[in-house]
Length: 224
Image 1: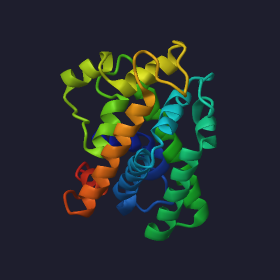
Image 2: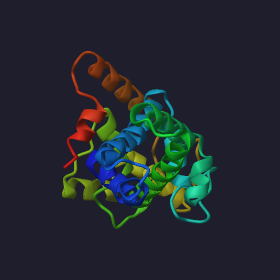
Image 3: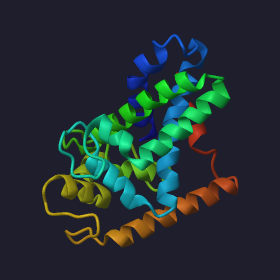
Image 4: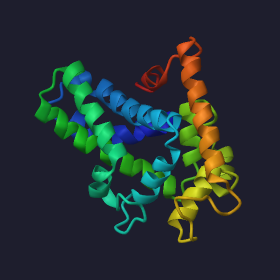
């Protein structure tokens, strides 16, 4: 799943990074890898802090639809108002300034374009019932070490059912009467949040004890 996120970032980074004269060519791949890490790491931190429902709200409200059900509204403008996106943009601006010595204005332009556009593309693909290769369970699972297989058949089965987060997202966005306080449809939202929170916290502990190289090492493996 992280490779799919990286590919989405590369797609929107073509104009924002690769064709941007303010970003030195030798930094192009690293900047896009850092953007991917910013998004993935942000989600992982939020899940570990018990904020999985905030991510569900982001996904149900984001995307290109003009009338999203989430508090952030639809489209890029709505995403930029979401506190999760604002946090990611701010973090990425700081990294671009410190790591690549970009001016604050250049860093702001890159971050305010690349992060929300990439998130918008990710949300659209996750919501697309015809895209069996990407779902919310696989994405979160790939961050916390509990799933995220890119096997097409397995993802197709998950997209069609048996994926609690994806099923919740589809209930929220499909007009099925879902709400942010309860899962409905036989799902206990708080139980799901608790389980994902614990898995994410365990993943952090595993990294600290030397059991994994971290997200950035995985993402750098996708650079060709």
